[in-house]
Length: 161
Image 1 (spheres, rainbow, N blue to C red):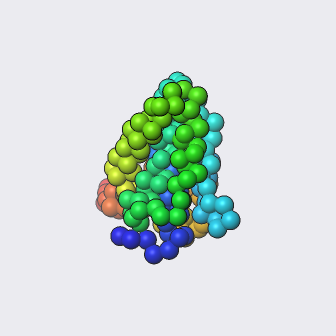
Image 2 (tube, rainbow, N blue to C red; image 1 turned 45 degrees about the horizontal axis):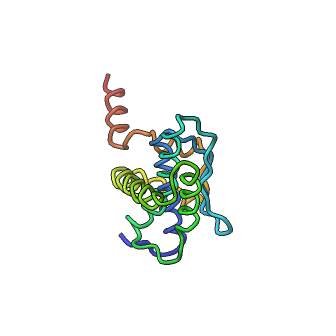
Image 3 (cartoon, rainbow, N blue to C red; image 1 turned 60 degrees about the vertical axis):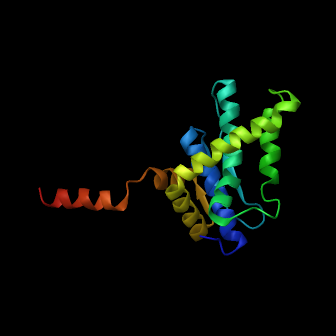
């Protein structure tokens, strides 16, 4: 599926950040696809230093990975801010000459994560397209909800008891 417009690309991009954060245990505050400043906002994240850095960089790179997975190559530098942020997380902890390798390694992790979470990314992107903004409660409710078929089966069983 190729995205039809910038708003749709942005929704998939932000959904990639959201789902990777949720799956890696990084607190989510909100996501928006507001035209002025689309963004994903995370909360304070406490974890062992090495794990925290890897998770935060993976979250940075999962936005562009999700956008490219669904919409095709990014040609407008829509990943520039994410790459700068990923690099800023890594710079204090890795020698300069290894940063490219570290980013490539974690980009691969982000790509695998978004590939495995494609249905949830579509769910969040659709909600962002419909509402424009999602807060943490809305995000966690969408991500943790049971598939519709499972809810129907459970409801059916309850009425026949």
